[in-house]
Every structure is written in C-alpha cells, then in structure tokens.
Image (tube, rainbow, N blue to C red; front, side, top):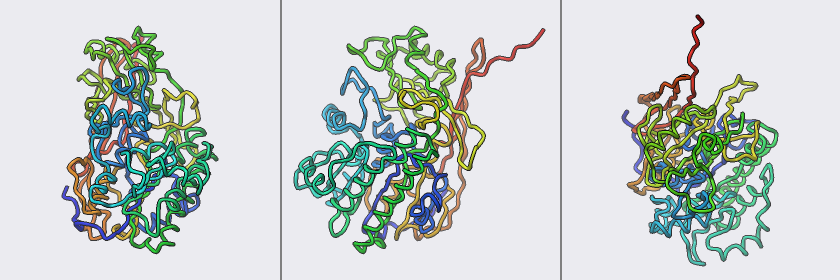
Length: 507
C-alpha cells in the first residue's frame, strides 16, 4: 500500500517513551487505568500492536531503542550463549558485565546498530533514561564522564557511577524487589522527573517500569497482585504527566506509552535439556569445561528455548529437530538448515552471526474465557520458580504477540483508534521522523497514519501464513505461523504446532 503522507518533522520539543513491562492491551480500562485510558482518548490507540519475536524484555527493549529486529541488533534473547563473552554459562544480555565485555570483543558493536540516545548525542541533544529493570541500560550503555548531561539509571547502577550518591541522598536506597514492585517503579519515576529533569526535560526521556511484568510472572495475568501493579503503573504515568504540567511543557511533549510484550499463563513446566539428554544428546545449560564438538548448549528463555550446537553438525541439528518434533512441549521450531517441518530463523528476524542453531517456541492452548480477558496457557522452560498458574511470555501465542501502545501529543491525531498493524519496531522510526533525524538501520515504518497532517487511513493489510509438516511413523508434525504485512513490515500474530497422531483404522 501507499503510506499516508505526513509532515517531514514534528512539532514537539520533547519526547518521552514510557514502558509498562508486560502490559496486555485488554487490561486498559477507565476503571483500572484511568490515566492511560484518558491518554488513549486524547491521542492514538494502536489497536493491533505487536512486539518482536522472541517476545521477551531484552529483545523488545533493544527494538524500542533501535527500531531494528534482533537479527540486525544482535540482541536475540534475554539469555544467550556467547562463548566469546562467557564460555561456561549463558549470559543475561542486559547485564553491565555482559554489555561491557560484549562491546570489548566486538569493537563497540554489542548492539550492532545505533540507539535513539546515541543518535541524539551525535546531534548534541540531551537524554535521560531511568529504569526499574536492568534492560534500561540497553537504551544508552556507553561509558560517560562524571559531568555528562545524559544520565542513566538501570536498576543495577547508574551512568556516570559518580551520580549514585546524589540519587540515594535524594531518593533513598533503591528498594528491594516486591510484588507488586511498587517501590522500585516509584523510585524510577522519581529518579527521572526529580533527579534527571531540571527546569525542563531533555530532548528525549525513557522511563522503564518493572510492572506488571514482575507480578504477572509471580501470580499470573489478572491476579490481584498484577491488577494492583497495573494501578501503580497508571499512577506513575500520572507522575510523569504532572511533572510535565508543572514545567509548563506538556503541550510541547509527545509521549508514547508502550509495553515490551504481552503475557500468557503457564499451564505446565517442561525441561528441554532433560528431554534431550534422555534422547542421547549431551545437552546442558551450564558447563564445568567449555563445551566440545557436538555438545548442545540449552538456553531457556521461558516460552522459547535456544539451542547452540557446538561445531554446527548438520546431522546433529537434524537429529535434534526430529527429537523436538516428537515432544509435547514443542510448538514452532526454527532451524539454521532448511529441515522438514521447520521454518528458517529469518522468517522471524532471528538469524545473524550470534543466532542459535535451533529455536523452539513452546506450545500453547487457548482455553474458554472465564472472564473478559483471553486465557492462553503455555509450556514454560528455564524459569522453574514459576509454576502452573503463574505468568510467562516469549512464545508465539496471540496474547504474547499483542501488546499495548498509546501515543499523544502535538504530533499525534486526537481521539483516533488505529486498526492498522503496528509494532514495537515502528516506534523508533516514528520518533526519529518527528525529531527530523535520519538512520539507515531501521526495520520498522513511520506510523504515518497516526500523525497530525496525515491523510485518511487507507490501504490493504496483507495476511500471510506459513505451514510446515513432516511425517513420522506415529503421526505428523505440523506447525504454522500467521502474520500480517504492511509497508514491507511483518507483524507476527501467532504460531503453534504439534504432533498429530495417526488415526488407527479398526479391522
């Protein structure tokens, strides 16, 4: 389709990105989230919004920082096996230790494309980042001088580190984790609006809240704890808006409230490594010595599992895939080779030099709705402290792959519901367009239909489906992937699969 026309650059002086980690769109309501609901009525509600896959925090945190899919940013999961960084155990991709070592071994290309903050710094614009989770570091990770005007707080420390005493004198010690994680989110919001903002906010600010992700993991979507966490997020959004009003700049500020992913409910735990060892593979998550030829490194990420085959033997990869296709937890399998019953990793933008050889997205089941909220249960691997009834994501379930996005301000249309497919990958292209900045590394599109001065929303959404299957003696493995495309950007709607037993004909 031809995109609606939009102004070459925006009217706003200030831009703010607020992330409610794990917020599902079906929980936005006048009763539960009055501030966000009012902002939705004031601006644009993206009614068909999507995270990138894997639908995890660090992946989408990087997408929201760069506008690039994982295969281009090289941040492919929350936990990855990077032997050049750590040869014995998976790394948490958001940790300061991994980030520093990653930049050291890649010549500064741990994140292989520029972030919004880096682009703005190159144009001498100031930024501020405050996050109640470590993922905030991925928005602006570079070391900086003690007098830097671009502060960062990322739950495990700050940049520059010399600002830490100033923050703790003002705000107190960063609170311990709790459920709901009210203390940490309040601290992060105050850090941004009281410590980092002066008389006026900087050109660009990021506030990353830990909820409702934390409480949904612990207690499940829709639990009393998760609902209380959502209410607190709404209060934190009110904190930001009031801070803008006190400075007299709200009318000059574009604000985007988005979540990094959706959520599902755990139906059962699985142990992919144990299943592979039972089938004869030397598959482990941690190692006493660096793994050797034909060893398999298993890296759990909740609803998806990454498998790294040392030596990349095509025969071993094929045997692993066949084994996985006969496991009850397997939903969709992506492989480095074009193997029967799999999809290429590039179909979901998770190829690249650091990609695992196999990705297994665990199976999910849609249950009859017990209230107004969709109820989808998934298999969970890798985080065994979460049991059935708790929450998880990183699958290809429809509730993982649809998330929240609201935008309001002088550059956004008023009172609009945008039905067109959109995604986290589109946030940075839109922000850079409004800031009149250029980048050659963007995978998303400008959300032109949502901007003031755009022509009426029009165009055709292209629906797509991929299917793959392979026959076994005991049945047929089948998997699918549903997606939509608009202006060359693909948005995943859902994917699933399983082994369908062969019918037995009575004689």
